[in-house]
Amino acid sequence: MRTTLFLLAWLSAAPPDTTVVGPQESLREVAERVLGDASATAELRALNGLASDAVAPGTRLRLPGQERALALKALETARTLVAQAKGEGALREAEARLSEAEVSFRAARYAQASEAANAAGTLVSTGRAPHPSAFSVHVEPDAGTTTVSVTRGPPVRVEAEGVTRPVASGETVLVEKGQPPVAPTPPLAVPQPEQPEQGAVLKRRADKDKKDRLGPVKLTWAAVSGVERYEVEVTRESGGAAIVTQTTTAPELRLPLLPAGRYAWTVRAVGAAGRSEPSAVRRFELVPADLPINVKTGPWQ
Amino acid sequence: MLLALALPASPLGCTAEDAPAVPTTSNTPAPVPRAHLRGLKGNVQIKRATADEWSIASDDVPLFENDKVRTEAGAGADLVFSGNGSTVHLGGDSLIGIAETRPRPGRPRTDLTVLRGRIDAELEQPSTQSLSVNTPAATIQAGREIVFQ
Image 1 (spheres, rainbow over the protein chains, first blue to last red):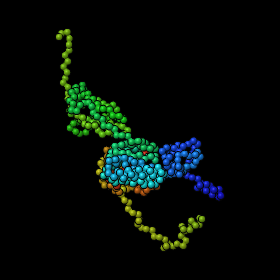
Image 2 (cartoon, rainbow over the protein chains, first blue to last red):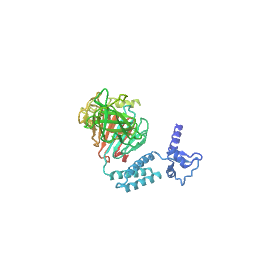
Image 3 (cartoon, chains in turn orange, purple):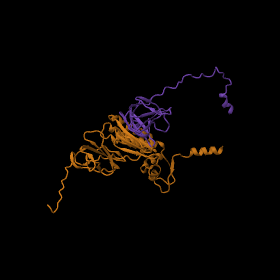
Image 4 (cartoon, each protein chain N blue to C red):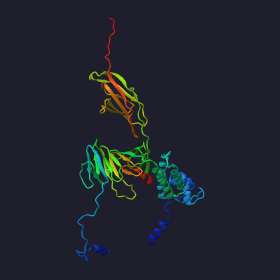
């Protein structure tokens, strides 16, 4: 019984959130080791009442608790919101509250930092005209990978494995099961069609077997960086369903033989960042080429 | 100790007349729909939390906690959430579940769980609305909870 009491007394006396300064370790190195942030020396100084960064090896330092993580999250959110609100009303006051939050955070006054950061975020949000928010979530059939794309409005927060990442409008983030969200990738550029020229009339010969089919026709466009493949869609100019839908990894596509007529085509880029918008519609007309006249040359001429 | 535990359960000193009457009707409040299913296109099916079978969904059907909705390829439907008016379009070949409203300590609130497929969500006024979507890999939060979290 006495042993248990001693153990309980020792456990309650042991500081729960402390660390000991190692031999030849600076305060900056301690901050890097325990908080993952070398610039957090001011917080450690404030928490431990230190006048300077000089600490003797073997010194036991008090460390911030969970309230630091909460304050940091509030600060990151407020920074994002204030940065996005540049040029909008109510920004000056929000910036002042954010600055106040930064000062409180460095002084290890985490509760005040959270409060000021939330106030800054609220000022920015309420000062804005309401922007509708739109985003998509796609879960692969293997139930492992989640893709989040924000198409408009304020940022959406994506959280996985304890890491939260804001995803702004136009950005896409991919989350593998059991992994934190990766940095949002910028949206893919829209491919620019090159050939055939807009409104081109293409004279092509009929196929040997299928006389009503003409070709070949090759579509080309400017390559897009970060692309995995391109999706090409060809329709009759009069509209209706696509008559050709094909993917290719190169920035060109040789179409199958087609009947004479007017056609329209678009191309999209597809990559890790999702699908781009379709390119501008490019049109061409396919007409039968005149039959060639072959005159054999010979000595009788 | 055993005696102390046994006493309250014992009928000693308690006649049948003294025992509290068993209520004949349940006082449990009627469940409140979390969302309604609208704009159905193609084959959309629903499985109630208490049911084992899938059934064909109909327009404007209310959805309660732990209900599931699935769509075949090419099908689609809109979920309109009663609480905040946010709208979620459910794409083809998808499977979603309506989350519980009961808060769980240490876990963020969830409106919807996407198990497979694609949803497109819209919040007309994100400063006053919020939507939280869970997937097997992540939690997505949109709207006012971003500021006040």
